[in-house]
Amino acid sequence: MKNLFSRFRYNLIQMIYAHGKKVGGLLLLCAALLLVGLTIGCPIQRLTGIPCPACGMSRAWKYALLFHFREAFQYHPLFLLAPWIVILIFREGWMPQHCRKGWIYHVQIIVAAVLLMTVYVYRIWLFPSGPVAISLQGGLLCRGIRLLYNFL
Figure 1 (cartoon, rainbow, N blue to C red):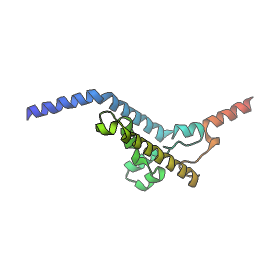
Figure 2 (cartoon, one colour):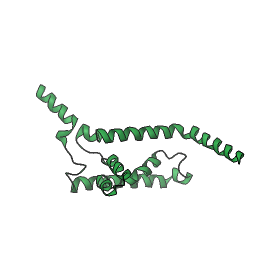
Figure 3 (cartoon, rainbow, N blue to C red):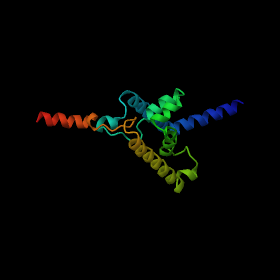
Figure 4 (tube, one colour):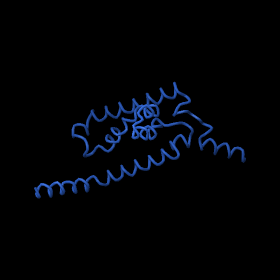
């Protein structure tokens, strides 16, 4: 039993050493995105006034973690796709060999991108005042240009 525990501990230490930087970086990225998403909202929308295809994803996960799935799907219906996209991006060592290379990986990326863009266009087209409303006048870039124009 002691030998089994020491072997498990050795394998765990090797795994942390091999993938520690990736996991640590991923956790840091998730924490930063969550902090930005919950405080100022989407940085792209804040800057330009045009929402990005992932707008509402942080708020969707916030509501999903509180078990309010109806609100989560209203903010972004593809919020459950986010973990899979993260796994695809950081795929080395986490996925089977046949999924890491070749056409399966590329098909998964293309399907995820098509789904995101389809939902993005659908939400902007049918729900212009929803969570992904376009407000060019509200963007910092437009406000800065307007301020510079009025100054000159």
